[in-house]
Image (cartoon, rainbow, N blue to C red; front, side):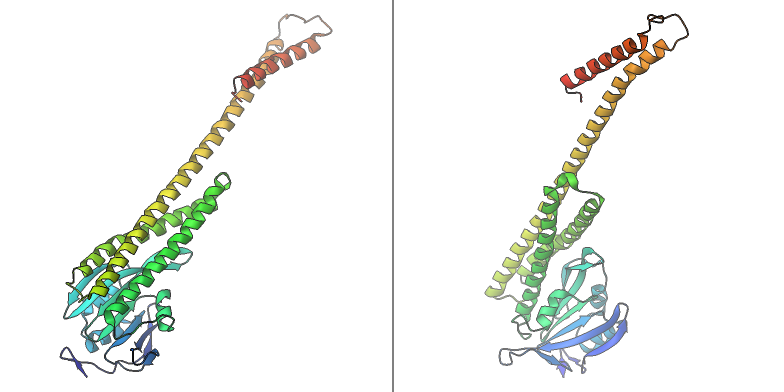
Length: 329
């Protein structure tokens, strides 16, 4: 079969050891006439090719058998790749980032979507949960409707962002209710939440520019219905950015509130200790005075001890009452 003047080899489903374990190339096909999702053992025009954790050999295979730019395939495996859109050789390459939870930390990972004349290709360095819904046939889509399938990917990615951000918001609200009782564990969680939200913003802000570029029609042919879908995705993306910023403000407010409470508590403890120190200083001074090796008042009195102790108690009580009256304690 010839596509764009380049022969398409029989691209088959294969497994091979990659840097992150077993890598996989899977080919799916579904049309209005054939509504059941099919997994093919070789490439067919109108297919969706899914590539997860590919090896260098598999990337070479894709670049050779499909009209794909090898450099863009390499970029797809860069963990720091930023969202952008490119067009080369009649193929549109869209780089985006997808939320991913790993090692108790929520971050983002790159995904490249390539849209050619007769195929859609997705390349990711890690398995992505939102693609499982498509691969399991849970969502209605057709691989021959390339632009709509591509936009469905973005809708599902945004749904994942909403899910993660709302989860963070719920936990932040839960902690803010018991602000005085939070400990180091919650503080560490807040640091992780801020890191996740920063990662989300770093992905969502350039994605907004990417979507606006798509809306221009320079990279993809968009019908009126497609343009409306892109506008909906742009609106959703802006809402996600606002949610991230709002949650980051909430986290800062909680942290500042916690710091204020801790500072007030510390000031109160210092105030109490200072007052007690002054109260206890009174008997110390009196004891030191009567401990001098000179002739002192009451030195000959048999009731000297009781008189001194009584006076000490009265003076100390007077100082304590003065502190309480002025709310220094």
